[in-house]
Image (cartoon, rainbow, N blue to C red; front, side, top):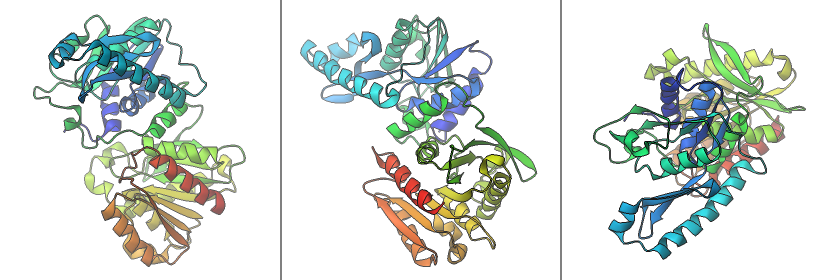
Length: 422
């Protein structure tokens, strides 16, 4: 395993690309899994982010095997070797293309809405995916980008098999890869978390980075004698501000938390996503699970936020995910805490069990219906809470809420809870 998740892979890829891409780049992620990787690259390069819409053409009776790919602007790439070996007919190929072009059009509407694609005419296009396997999709993506007028194409992935660059010779002007293992079976084998990326994460990432760095969301927060990065968004007329406590191995760039924050912002609730630990501290795994330490950082951030002019007079809420939920509940149980509401997503309240009966802020526990272990832990926690509280399950959702519509439901539930109590 080389990467914790796609965010980690994106950071490593961004380090590789620093200083080699050139001026005025546009970063294009391949939906869905390539977008969280591309978002990290766009942040590091200070570049706008867009999607490069392509679709794999799967063999009818073996859909995971690519016989080609299609893209916008009528691009079509066929792997003649796979077609011959599998005996796919022209009729089957045409039917697969018809079906996938309908999906392509629908995804364009879903991800971009009424907005036009980012203009890449005469610019350097950095095409990013979460890995390179057969190469059909990447080749189609490069041809789509070329058709849109890019002056230079950089194809970049976190992991690919040895010799991968030879397969896209002529399609990309430059190729970059963090890892090129000799024994390559599937992209997912090199990730700790390779769960499917929900559409909501893609949309949230594009909205936040479409025009490059968002105006003045980046802040520096003094925590533990050092400064850590954060993203602060306070809509006009906000009713309150919610601080996000992310789970282990995550950061302020968490696509899931960003998707929820986007929903809160649209509901008129401000958000602060920040790193509870510095990079050096996070490298020590004992810090990642130190609930009292993380809770203290959350409290410090709340004190800092209360002194900001844009948050003056606004009530504070906590949103905790996974182990971050324990930190949120621990901090909310501090004597004199003024936090007005808490929401836990797939949380581990058991890590704050000794303090649950001291929490006074109204608390919403959201758990995936297909996450039985965490659901049981939250049921036990609900029996210990003495404050106003509610346990809600999202049907058929797993721990990461990657199922279609699951994360959107989390955002809706959180927005309603905070809007009523802040």
